[in-house]
Image 1 (cartoon, rainbow, N blue to C red):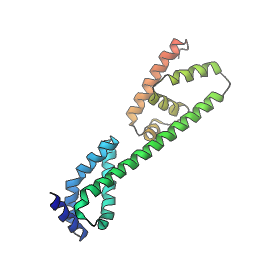
Image 2 (cartoon, one colour):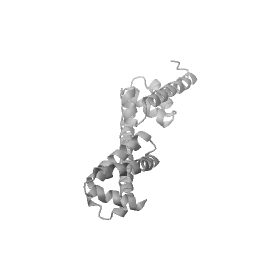
Image 3 (cartoon, rainbow, N blue to C red):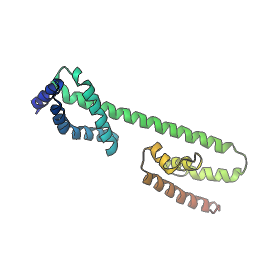
Image 4 (spheres, rainbow, N blue to C red):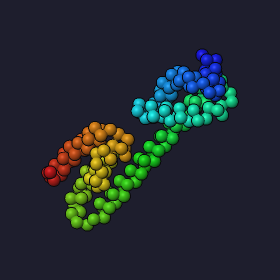
Length: 180
């Protein structure tokens, strides 16, 4: 098995494009599984595997020890997966900071302080994921699609979180005699 990879890598380095097709056929699913193991999203894992192939094709000429192809290629997939996780983490931090800024803006308005305090307390009682969706939707005027893209979740999940948040807010506000 290892010798087969060695031969395919050497043939590709020498210009045989069919050797690449054989490598892709053998390794692509392995790359997808490795990326999925890290990012836990099948579509993103497929994208990472595809991006990894592009890097592998561009840099395979620099691979001197063809017997190291598997570990070298998996390291590229691993690095691409970590890059994706870092970017997603930065996006979430940015969203969180934006939400915190919006909370500050909402809290600075003086009019209707009592109602605003009750609303803010009610929103703070929601689970974190629902808080973010509510704040992006109502204070930032993000569309459902924009929220789903920002949070890297589906539109359906966004709708579900917003619906569940509204239902919980209704119960909380009803408890405080602020019926909607």
